[in-house]
Length: 318
Ligand SMILES: [Zn+2]
Ligand SMILES: [Zn+2]
Image (cartoon, rainbow, N blue to C red; front, top):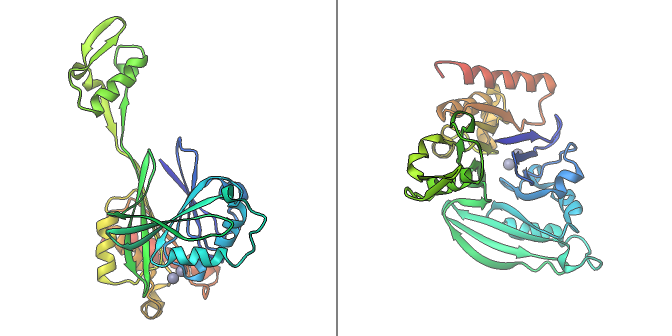
């Protein structure tokens, strides 16, 4: 299961930290100014996901670099068209003569379309941008136990909305199986996952064809988590959100404006409270969290905005 925590205080820019049970690394979504993001969390980060590079989503990237240089590992940065040059430009604003080549490697995955990703690599001290390969499809990041897919939305500039999806796992209920555990459990799961029906499984000196034991197993569906930042509240974006995030367990979605300011949402290519809630409801998202509010609002107004969001989410006729 994924855990997710907003690292920005009220009034700060957005940054969300994602972790997964039984997985050692953290994942930073958006590099807005976020004083609750710790040095340890930054250093333990395996990949960074940026929706777009408006300053409120990218300003804290300097702090991230500050703490990551020296960790001597590869960190992946995902973002829309232009991200590779923008990462390089930020880095080149500093002097690196005392930093070794192996201090860090950034792999930058730049999404050009919903079907094309260009992969770059960049290393100190020269920070030359090297194109490594091109990927097709919308899987932007992959680990052994989960994948992250993206869909491009329109915010007068392309922005990426990300979905984390944990792989399904095969489980066994030993207590009700009548057997005691042992290495056969893994052998049985492997046989099940690889369709080896006749594989012999030995339990307590007795041999069974694997398929006779498959009834002891069940599939546990993997968890899902979505991050949808700045986007216009328009039909095309909403169709893409519904397609990509249908039935997601938990989604953070930008609700930049209150409903009374929906004209501002149109002018600034943003969404607003009840519309963000509606698209979450239409996508059958189980838990929808409004985030990223305009700085024009005080704390009371933000509370009103969240109330508007929740009313629309729970209303039966929106
Ligand atoms: Zn923006
Ligand atoms: Zn923004």
